[in-house]
Amino acid sequence: MHPRLIPSLLITVLVVSTGAWLASPAAGEQLFYLTGEEARVAQLRALWNLALDQTRPPLHLAPDAAIRHLPDNPLGVNTFLEQEVEEAKRARSLQMIRDAGFAWIRQPFVWSDIEIHGKGDFEDRRNQPYRSAWDKYDNIVALAERHGLRIIARLGAPPAWAHAGYADLGEFGPPARFEDFADFVEIVAQRYKGRVMHWQIWNEPNIFPEWGNQRANPEDYARLLCMAHARLKGVDRNNVVIAAALAPTIAQDGGGYPGGGLDDLIFFQRMYQAGAGRCFDVAAAQGYGLFSGPYDRRLNPLQTNVARHVLMRDIMVRNGDGHKPIWLSEVNWNAVPNDPTITDLNRFGMVTPEQQARYVPMLFERARAEWPWVGVMSVWFFKRPSDAEKNQSWYYFRMLEPDFTPTPLWEAMKAYAQQRRP
Image (cartoon, rainbow, N blue to C red):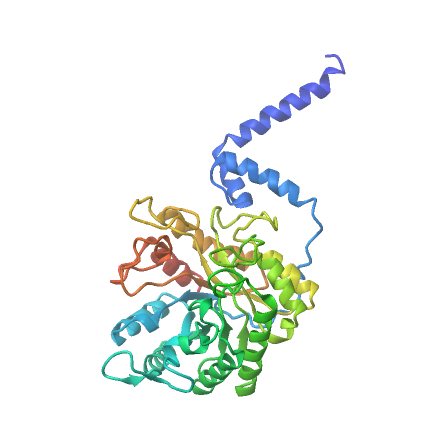
């Protein structure tokens, strides 16, 4: 054979062998664990994206840093127990959550549901008979203690009176006086001192409508966070302050009405520039898979996937917070059916119930193996009190139906949680 033909022959052999490997089932599985994609064309596109990632500056992740606030059991679940009218259903929920091996619940302590009618007024007069607005929250805390579950208390959602003079912001917007929120935070912390130790301040302030009908404002959120931090530490220095989970978005418009948001990475860095680094013990992100699977390793700042918190970690390390963890406040894929009765257009990605049940435990395993800075991960969500929202796509994140019928996701997470017990 002529020597000049050897390079061409080698290239031909390489191309043929690579093509044969790519066509094999084994290649598909290996590429899934590299790209998070199951379709072959999507896998090849992801490989190209991963190659482009190598052209960006290296991330600073400090994987060997001593991280505080990393629990032995990171398994959590989001609950809406304040919406369950019957105490027996709250008790059944927490019994099931504990029996399945979960250790945490992320539970709203809704400002507008506690200090309802005016500042310092904690009586619920919305229905007869009047009662203390604290009753159901006292019950939730007591039940969680009984079942050995720790609470992440999510604080936000101002009452109408707190919006006075600022009412155009909508029900989720910040209060007119941040001091009113700080006062509420202190009162709740005093009531449950030594019983609830983990407090999350607001949720997704970088998008509409979570910061109201206005543009997202990292500087204002930092001020609100620091005021809450001071009150919580004043009540008990052992209280753990968790920053708001930031919604993964690449939007640049700031989040003004009627939609949009501000890129979570930009928002986070501006929080640091506003001094928020001294005002939280734990950072928080959302861990939604959206349009790819749990092993998507792409880290493009202009795309969102389940690993986006890695880019947040880089920001933390660069700002001197390598010792702090990130907790993933909401993790899941959306098993929304292809049903015309579901009226909203935002599908949050779309997977089958079987894929959802496979992906979520995989994400927990990936976190344990690859992300030493990730702490509690809370599945979104346990159940709703009724099926009134079945026409909305977000309903299909649920683990149980309102009547406690389990979904494949619940069964899969129960099996996973019990398997990983020491």
